[in-house]
Image 1 (spheres, rainbow, N blue to C red):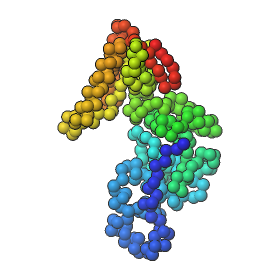
Image 2: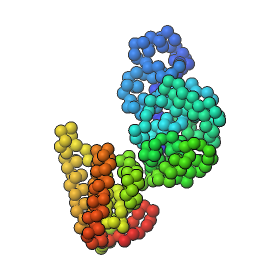
Image 3: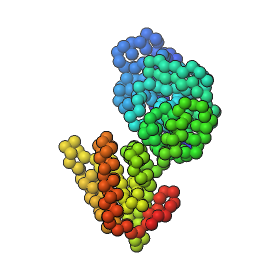
Image 4: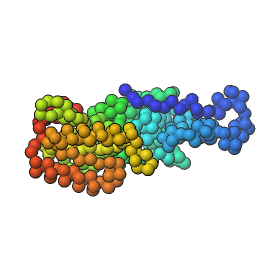
Length: 329
């Protein structure tokens, strides 16, 4: 299964197609000078309005499609560009350069706005999206794990596992095909940590924070039940041995003046009721938001304080069920 989001190829204008419609080179130059068309690469254009209206990911995708149009046979979109083509989440990952991969053993290259990776790949590691050859999701995750910092690689890998059904074993098998790759050691570590149960970039980053800070590794998206067997909640992070629940709150939206609108107020109210039920069952609940992740010591201190507070009280009642099917009491 692959998460395909390309769909922008219909906006790409190739020189030969323009000629077929009766547009001459003089007219093409005039369209570019007047700002009606934007030149993406040699002989490949896009309507300027379309390009300007796209976000950073969309503009990268247009440049990637243009690069693919003039690439040598056997060259495919890879790395970050393949991640964009597949719709994978990326966090703090530069999108300035289009990444292409050619199947030879040497000859890495870099030119303005383009990086060429000379790496072997198998036929089953390439998929076709709108007529463009793109590295598969699993191969893309492997490449990102080899080249990106740990946190960025985990964000992309978590999203691939959750939305595209990619398994860690599948990515590990691809890494094993080229054991001498200089990025393999760090890639293996990242892939082992990836999980398809993180629901957002913030949750993926939070899991990385737990491991980097030496906190207990939590279960994610576990179902919590009360002593009488009634379901209480599905929680972001669970430390059952410590009686602590962690919640990353990236869902409530506020107006620019910082005041919650009616919908947000309803979400806050429901969350308070939910949290009250968890506390009544004996759980200590700790929360953090996006801004807190920029100061990780704040989150670490809150979690450690919650663990200490829970240790002074009775054990929670009821039981929990993890996504892996574990029943914990």
